[in-house]
Amino acid sequence: MKEIKKNLVILAAGTGGHVYPGLCIAKNLILKNVNIFWIGTKNGMEKDIIKGENISFHHIDFSGVRGKGLKVILKLPFKIAKASYQAFMILKKISPNAILSMGGYISFPCVIAGIFLNRPIIIHEQNIVFGLANNISRFFSKLIIVGFPMSIQNEKYKFLGNPSRYEGLPRKKATHNKNVFNIAVIGGSLGAKVFNEIIPKAVYEILRKTEYEINIIHQTGKTHKSAEIQYNNFEVNIDLREYIDDMSEVYEWCDLIICRGGAITLTEIMNQGIPAIVIPYPYAVDNHQLQNCSFLEKRDAIILIDQKNLTEKYLANIILKLINNVDLLNSLSENIYNLNNSNSTEEICNEIENIMKINK
Image 1 (cartoon, one colour):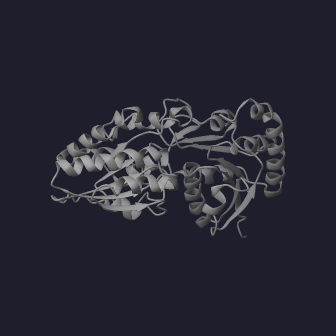
Image 2: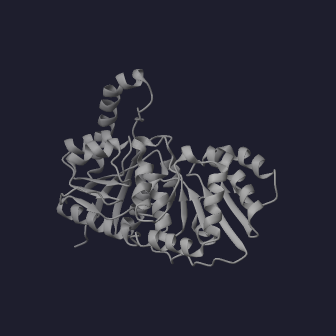
Image 3: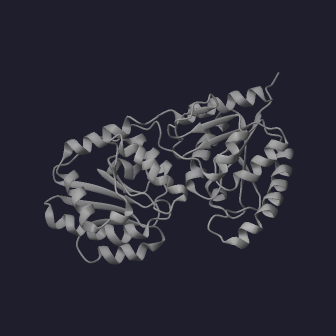
């Protein structure tokens, strides 16, 4: 008798930090004959990211409220009620064997609907601290998967790491050409304005103090012109890109990466064992990027710079120290690679499948 395919609903919207790991899980489970349904927002980035995959997309009308003012907060109960009803109707039609929340505002009304339909809720939290939606939803969940170790003694919490597009790939080879040093600057999916203003000046300082050939790939985001103007003030081998979709070539090329502290960026660096200077985004919700980075810094796996201390001279001195100290570079690479879980996606999918088998 032919086995009936299981149905999984994935809740993810708004940022690549939620969407990309959800997509890794979706692709793996599709290969295992699982039907994947995705709930997001009508105009969110998630719709474009999952386009072309064998995933049925649905949307509800809901948006985040933090920092939006009193008027939006007062309307919140009505928005939750409307979005929960929309989610209820979608979930009732799909009749999923399980619901996977990747966190973010979109997940909360969907989890409420899932509870009413008595469907098992699985949570994946990418960061070292729970986001607001996952922090509430975890009390109603069957399984809670965390991307970083947490000091919670409860059998339904499992540390399995973060799914990544680059997990399981061959580790980056340490080349360390004596005359060349390659630096990648990645300010997150939207770039970082402060990176575009300060890092070119730091590169200029470095060029004045080293005989090395310095090569830069710099993802600028929307403030591309700001970085372009800065780099035009001096001669440097620069490749400016507004956005980089496939990072594998960049990860293989660079000797050092300068980046933000989002969970998925850090996971990708772990996958490849790349020496990193990490400058957490200071306005991230609950300062979660700093907390992610503090975990790694305590294990000598990254160099952490608080943005309030970021100046061109300070950054230039740190990079020069790394250029002139191959042992330190190798140590950073080894320490961060040792924190890597090269099988996160498979392990997470096995847990999801086990729950779906129980809830036919």
